[in-house]
Image 1: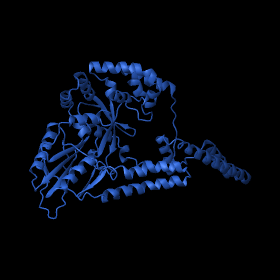
Image 2: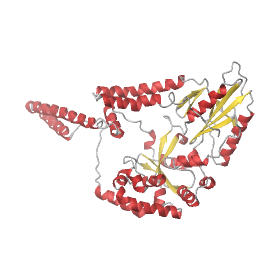
Image 3: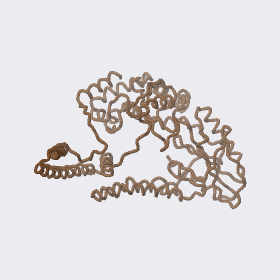
Image 4: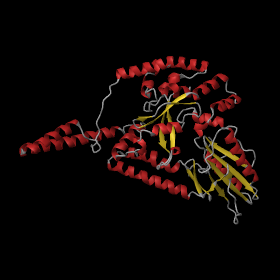
Length: 471
């Protein structure tokens, strides 16, 4: 396999040309070679003191600037020729609005990649569907090459994949991972505030490939129970500490075998997850390589499925409790009657024990609880205790992008969505000033504003046909 990827890389080097382009911070996007040339002529005429030459140079420069701006406008409009090409459309929007993402302050720290790396401690059809704009992995083979050469590569990659499965062994060059740390929040205070997104070879993603709505389920169960007399609900929103990184592959394989997955495939997955070379890249800085045999790389196709299969046996033991899982987002609902919380507290204790047995760490500081009680008089409620630490009871929290409150009202969620929509309306105004066609403005509105307002909660979370099963 390594010889195949090396050959592909050599072909890329032979047929592509690399060019260094100097970009200045104040450079206008419409600047052209002709304008730069005429700028030099104007400056030379100014320094020489020749007024006639300076007058001509200024006229020529003004004409060239107008021409360059017109050409630039036409190039920008080409980004909006097809409403299906969202990537080119977004590039055009970025150019018009001069949008620049916030740069991470850690880019200049050459020691951070090593710190984070230690901390995070039918083939042809698949190739033809590869996104050509996806970032290349450690092998530097781009998605465009795999997609354009699908017919030529399909047979050889099929043979390699079949041999890999039959021998239950993943080629070493496909196990390499580059970790790109992405901040979980705007202000980073510790290494745990980074999410380790894995860049793996695109070929490996092709090999990996060959819900019910969790929000609706939680609210449906809660509201149905609250219709009864003398009832309330305790909702525990679990936060795992680096859930994907702590999985023990050997324990996962035992569970996969119990689910009836054949031994050859189980051994292939075990080989895929163990002895994985990994490095961290931040800007131009790359850490040294370490080898990992725990966890599953975030960003891989298989990772969410493997985590779901690992937690399939995490079920509620009491019929008054429900455990709602959406990959690594887990919520425990205690439907309590007559102030008897014994079953709910026992359920949380069982969940804590299950996590310990499966090497999953509960982050008690980030785990939150909401108590929904519509009764007129509320007895004193003791907080939950997990691993000797009290769980914070809050009025509101965010669950899968939706703000849930103890009153089960939409005020907080609506306020958040309104703020987000207002921020995006600024870009819509910039696009309108650029005299874009109304169809482009409508597409932008529906894709970034309307979708943000309608999709995350108000239209789906209270769906009248929502249903859920225990466990």
